[in-house]
Image 1 (tube, rainbow, N blue to C red):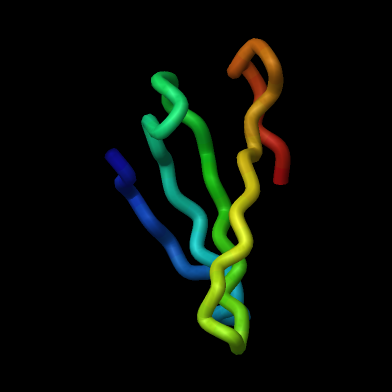
Image 2: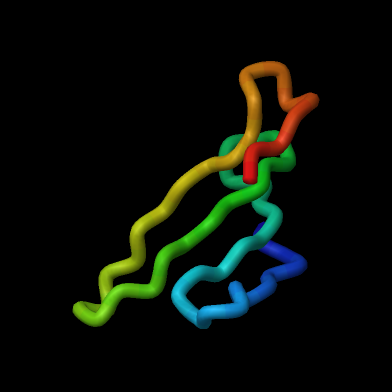
Length: 52
């Protein structure tokens, strides 16, 4: 499940929490002009750090 989505200040990214991999991770989706999102996971290997 995805939750707590937030838009970036420039309106080009959406950040949210997700359980897609079985553990809570921060995801960032870049909104592109062609309508195809670009995904990134922003967590460390041990899930104790978040990158920004």
